Structure formats: structure tokens, C-alpha cells
Image (cartoon, rainbow, N blue to C red; front, side):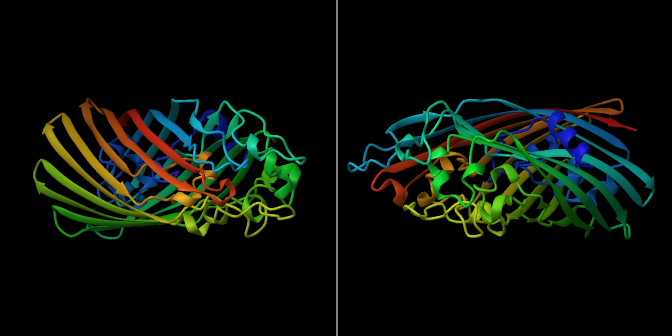
Amino acid sequence: MKQLIFLLILLFPIAAHATNGYWAHGYGAKSKAMAGSGSALPLDAMDAASNPATMVHLGNRLDVGMSAFMPDRSFTAGSDTGGNPSCILPGAYESDNDIFFIPHIAGNRMLDSRSSLGISIGANGGMNTEYDSAVFSSFDNPGGTASSPTGIDFKQVFLGLTYSRKISNNHSFGITPILAAQSFKVTGLEPFQPFSSDPSHVTNQGSDYSYGGGIKVGWLSRFSDSFSAGISYQSKLWMSRFEAYQGLFAEQGDFDIPPNLTVGLAWEILPTFTLVFDVQRIYFEKIKSIANQGDMIFQPGSILLGTDDGLGFGWEDTTIGKLGLQWQWRPDVVLRAGYSLSEQVISGEQALFNILAPAVVTEHYTCGLTKTLANKEINISLMYAPGEKVTGRNPNTGSQSGTLEMEQFEFEVSFSFLF
């Protein structure tokens, strides 16, 4: 099974999908066009990633798509150093790699009139940066001299097998066992090796891989012909450790994938207009490598990396509100639009090490459409996440301030085949 998941990583070269933390703002072009909402509205076979209970309402179909994700990531190191030698060279730093192509594929097959079986392959990402300079060169010491480029490359891929069943005409449930794989690489962190429980496994070890899984469950209820509600929960995905970076991440290289909960409503306010609203909660604080504080002070002899309570990115749990509108403009054309707003996952004092993962956007504006042909659909979605900044100070750089910034665009197209 590891060989299969490893192959999927190679075939699905995903990265840098930092939208809600490192969660994608939605899955599938239809949901993405409504800012990721739709857990109470059957849309396409990528619904397995939001609410598997909707799958039994989709019929037989295959959905294949590709997105072009274009993040602009940067940080600015302030000139207010106060003469502190342990600071980042003042100036603006832009990350390379500005476009990523992210595929997905999903299918659903009705077993009978009341049950279905589906398969889906999708992705998350988000911690991908590459700065040309040796960002941490001011921290150089006999134990390590910073190299360039500085950055990380983080990839995730998920394979889900979904069973969905109608309990009655108005209620259905779904369950999706999930297999997952992660790939991680980091460069330029040599100055921090002396502060690790395993200095030889902190940085510049190439790509390492982690495997594991978990489960997602969902429920969908239709209270009338025009109103429905859905709820889904994804467990923590228990992953094997990144052994090549067990001296970097907390708990000796552990990097599980956090659980999340989604609740959604869908209301057909007119025969051609449907309003959808989702609330999603992502529990980043359940994962020490993500949530442990990143403002610990590096002092000679201190061990702050790789231990159970070692340094992390300082991310907080986040709640996302997603509002979408679907309009049946013509019998063969559906128009969609959406907006989402999330809580900030990074506080100012955590900015230093989030140079590597500046996932600071909190808003998404989206739109899209579906064009129906004979037994086929063409789906398009557009997303814009306005530039957002987080500014703060870290005790390791004294009075120097730092500002993280990110702005995003995404274009996705998918093709649906109805059987």
C-alpha cells in the first residue's frame, strides 16, 4: 500500500495550497466556486472530501480536474534591529515558485437505488517557500552555517473510498476511510542544529515521506424539498514520522494531520436560486509540530527542536465561515459565487519561523459556472484571496519586527462524465 501512495505523490505533484492554514478552501470546482461551501448540497464526486453522505445523491459519475494555484508569498525584515547581531538582514524577501498545478479525480457508482461506492484522490498543501538567500545567516554559529536557498517543500495526497447510504428518503450517511501520504523537505536551517535533540536530522536531508490514514463520516438530512443540513467530521490522520527530520519537528518528527468538523445548510430560496452556508473548524492545536510555540529563546545548551514540547509554528485552531450562491441561469448553465472568512492561525509573535510557512490569508472571493452538455459537464472556478499581513516580534531577534504577507489566485477547470 505504501508503494501505491508513493506513486500517487509522484503523479499528483501538489504543493503550496495554503488557504485556510494549509487546508484548501474547497474541493472540486463546484464547491470551490462557492468558497468551499456545499456540505449540505450534493455537487460532484469530490463531495467525499466535504461530506461523504451526499455521495448517494449523485448517481454514476466521474470528475477529473486541474487547478492552477498562484500564491504570492513574502516577508519583510524590519530595520529596527537595535544593533542586535541575531537578526535577519533587513529588507524584503520574495519566495520563488509562483504557480502550482494541482489535479484531482473522483468517481461515484450507485450499487443500488439506496447506496453508492465512490473513490476520490485529492490534495492539501501549504507550507512551500523558497527564498534565494541564506535567510538565517545572522544566526550562524560553530554548529552550523546557514545555506541557501531557505525554504520548505510540503506535499500531501489523500485517497478516499466512500460508502454512502440512504437511511430513508430524507436522511443519508457516508463513511470514508482515508489513506494519506506526505512529503517534506527543508533547506537553510543549519544554525539551529546545535539546539536539536538530533542535530543531523534538522535540515538539508532531501525529501522524506510519511504515511498513514484516518476516517471521515458524514450525515445529510433533507427537512423539506427546499432545505437541507449536513454535518461531517474527519478524524486526526495518524501518520508515520518524518525520520529524516526527527530533529526538527516536535515529538521526534511526528506530523499528524489535524481533525476537522464541518456543519452546513442549503436553502433553495427560489426554484433557480440556492443559498449555502458552511462553518468549518480545523483543530491545528491537536498537532504539536504545528501548534507548539515558535517564540522559544535559543540559548547555548538548550534543546528546543525534536523534543515532545519542541518548537513548532505556533498555529491556532481556526473557524471558517463559507457563504455560497448557486443560480440556475439557463437549463444548461449554472452560475456560482462565494465568500469565506476565517480566523487568523498565526499571531504576530510567531512570525519568525512562519517565514517558512506564511499562511496568513483569511478571506476568499470566488465565482464559477457549470456548462452542461450531453452526459457531460464543464466546470470552472476562480478564487482570489486578498493580500494579508501579520506583523510581530520574536525574542530571538530582539526589537526587530517582521511582516509576513500572502496573496493568492486560483483557476480550476474540471470535466464531469455522467453515466
